[in-house]
Image (cartoon, rainbow, N blue to C red; front, side, top):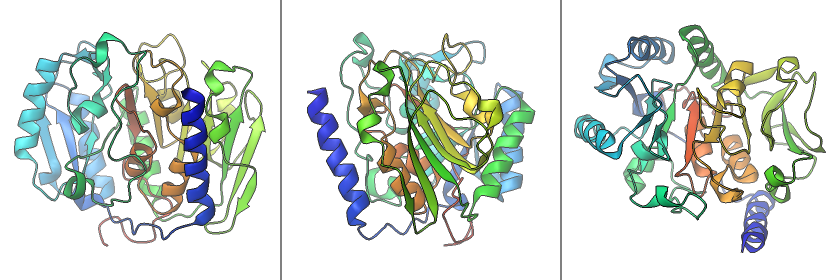
Length: 344
């Protein structure tokens, strides 16, 4: 079954890439984003204020809810109260959410970005080794997800401290419309279990529009690269990150069980990608087993990002089964968008 899905996904993804259908006119912008603040967390409020200042949002785009700050998880009941308050306050034109905190990052076994986007699904935590519900947003052409699908994809403005959060936001601002001449690196590692996405990696090639390079490598790490736009791999820990330079707007993730356990993982936290200079990432908060559907599809992610999608759109569209995952970074990073973040 896994092999069949992998082959189907590969042909779908590569046919999208090769056929180059008309790309969506991406239009999600700063005026359509809500920044969600945990009123119990002073750091959350400071991050939100900085985000508004740098991205040119209005004060009325901040929405407050109450969450505990002494643990990494919340219950489905705590989610229900917070989400009901938020949903009641959000105007219809808001299409996506920036969650301005680092913990809590999960709702029981589910990623908190999934819970605020899709809602809590009963029964999924009884056996995380099974498939989880498919996302209607996976590889979808929508450029207005709430208008079209009644979901608001969310991303955490996660960071270990205020200084790192501000660096992340600065990179997101710098990324918009920068059209970097970067390289997308896809690594098939010596860890066979965590290299299940290898058949989905695009082949080494040069893309003409926009002009980027794709490198498909058999290696456990890249070193001394100064042009990293995409970095996708599969290991419990990725070495040599300190030797790399990520371009503003870079996306990076590693397929492993607990990368989404942001502050207390026994493996490398996905936060390490942001600390190294990436602008967005993804990881799972509970044991997903090696289903590639629970992780970003490399070609779908790259296709939508190069088409002008924001980081929150491209990352969310690339994960078919996102229930156990958490999306982190600056949701408005859009290096391949040519228009102002506030004008369409």
